[in-house]
Amino acid sequence: MIVLDLFADVKPIWKKSSQFYGVPYVWCMLHNFGDNIEMYGILDAISSGPIAARTSYNSTMVGVGMCMEGIEQNPVVYELMSEMAFRKQEVQVEVNIQHVLRYGSSVLAIEEAWKILYHTIYNCTDGIADHNKDYIVEFPDIYPFLEGSQPPQRRIKDLLLVKKNHRFSLKETSNDLPQPHLWYSTKEVISALKLFLDGGNDLSESLTYRYDLVDLTRQALSKFANQVYLDVITSYQRNDAKSLDLNSRKFLELIKDIDTLLASDDNFLLGTWLESAKSLAASQNERRQYEWNARTQVTMWYDNTRTNQSKLHDYANKFWSGLLKDYYLPRASTYFGYLLRSLQENKYFQLEEWRESGYLILTNGRLRTGYMLLVLLAMLLEFRSPCSKST
Image 1 (cartoon, helix red, strand yellow):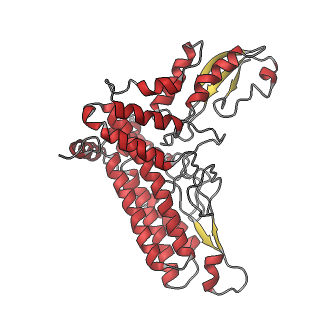
Image 2 (tube, rainbow, N blue to C red):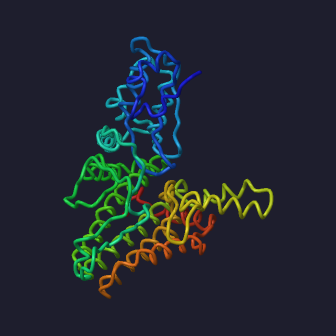
Image 3 (cartoon, rainbow, N blue to C red):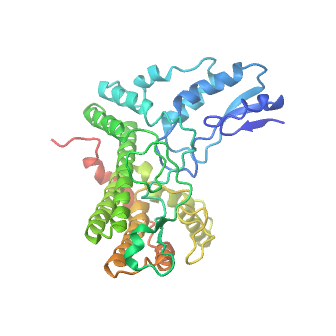
């Protein structure tokens, strides 16, 4: 028998179990849940963990492995983990990260940017399993609960957020509402993004540079959108319809902007996923079924009722162009509309009605299949992507 120390990159069991009580085991990196798109990692743990396990007293480690639920993200993490199968000593990540050979040439600004990313995004040491629940991709759901016969004016003191498992280790706001996982300074990452842009002229032909720049920009904008979402909820709590409307529009514009950004790189297209699923079909019926499966997996899964979503809803959320515009955008817009009407009409928030409307966004088929349209859009946007500066 061989045991998999499945989550050794964050919660290694071999240390607590006396080397699994003598049973051979494989040191594994899990890293990703639901194939979510989130820049995240613990590069130092990946570099040192397998070496420490192999050289420890009475070690029964027999290999290394990767058990991720999705792999097409964070290439620097998977490149390092793959390398550890052949390493006898730790990789000096802080030294080597400055010389990341992903772009074909060395640019000082990019090297400085990677130093920042190493200390921030790729240095998550809080022990929390990162499963992306940024507000753009997380199902928005609030319930203003009132006890007894309190008047509607009291609702702002009795707001209850119906969100589960929202954990954080770093708060950049005084807001007490539950927030998505955050383990780094967003200001530092914005500084890294500026350096990435500064180095763009020298790497404009590099596809890996474009991928990293799009992903880093997406990360920065999505974290900014989290704060805007909190501003929306705060406006509701304060019974401020004007502010709620303003912040809602800002949040929706951010979704549109990120969708446009993602369309500039074909690694971030919903159409690629849908076409890949349909290409496996041997008949039209299978083609429709496979497309339905693909749509459902990245959205609400299936065990929903009209007012109660699946426990796995948004588990496999994605930052993909097409998914943002045709699913997350109308869902957020509908949700904000219910919030605004609740204030304008001085009524309780219609939770059950909202949930039914949110579910219908998916079942009404608003998620388009347009693969070739998205590919064409990506080609057109290449001429004005964030990888090149305007002259």
